[in-house]
Amino acid sequence: MRTRSDLVVTALILACVALLLASPPASASGIGVTTNSVEHSFAQHVTFTLRANSDAQIARVYLFFRATSDEETEKKMLAPEAPAREISIKYTHDVRRYPLPPFAEIIFWWQIEDEAGNQRKTPTKTFTYTDNRFRWEQLSAPGITIHWIEGQGNPAFAQTALDIAQASVKDIRAELRAPTPDPLDIFIYDSEPNLQAAMVLTGRDWVGGQARPELGAVAVAVPPEQGYSSRMKRYLPHEITHLMVYELVAPQSYKNIPDWLNEGLATVNEQLPTPEYTLTLEEARDRGQLLSLEELCVPFSPDPRTAILSYAQSASVVTFIRKRYGAEGIRKLLSAYADGASCTSGVEEALGISFKRLESNWRISVEPEAGWRAVMDQIGVWVGLWLLSMLVAVPMIGGLRRSPEE
Image (cartoon, rainbow, N blue to C red):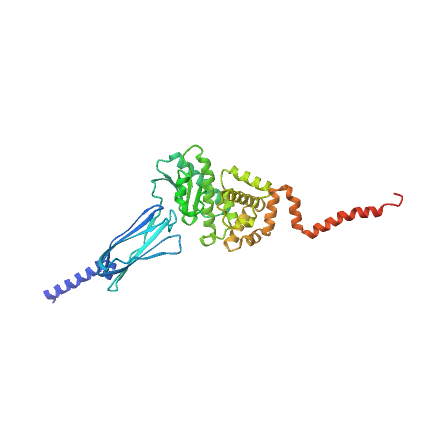
């Protein structure tokens, strides 16, 4: 028979076990966290805040953060001014000097160490680095969300963008057989200056749109004024093409796609052609100032005039390939480059002709009057000399055949 003292001991043991089980795992280190937060001002700063306590003096604190699309993690050692049992630390990251990708998901965590040797790593937290200078409205369909600045536009404006985006995805998927980014977020700014302010750290701040393939996001500048649908028909298919090429070839291979193919595809997929491209291409052709195709293997020049010619010429080359080799030729090119082919060897692998021959054939298509010159380039100098010798020899032979009476 159990005595009353036995029951008391048993109850005490059970109570202790219950307390141990109820304690959060992190408290085993002796370090507690009371505040773990982040706030940001777009294109200005991101501020991380930590408040923690411990039974021993807290000596060291580390902050880790990175965009989910980045491979490298930022690491910051943030020691308190003096070891203490309770600490409050703030770290402000200046994105003007050390930019973060717009619209990216940012993950972060802390590691805290005290003088007793205890350590605590906080669970990973995530926030979206949105452009919070503005309030955004939304219109969604399965897999696609249109974001536009509150008060700049209306439901018809947003629905037009959504319709164009859906049609673009359908057409591009039919040619490339590429998966659709999920989700696909489209941010529409009300002016180019506002878009440029958001993208100033991404390089080409003169363009009207920006694709972030690794984030499944597109940002374009379309003022909510008369003619907005024309801008949408140019910008949205262009940027969506980049996202779908990225999905097709996989992230690690996207950088292998030469710019003439990537930008050329995006340009020919625009639902409304840009007249300036046609005029620029014709002018460069007539002046003999066309760029070599090899020049278009790398990122285009930031000079607006040269860049416009680069886009126009790349679109013309892609159009030529489409007509000659069809959608299968485009897919073969993307596959070859995704597998690591160089800009020049990819053409030979996919189309069975040399890079120079492709350029020569394309030039013939845009310069019909240069056909004989291109043919001479292909058959070589020696054949040309042979033809020239025949032209000289024929009159001589004719003279020898004349009769003496003549």
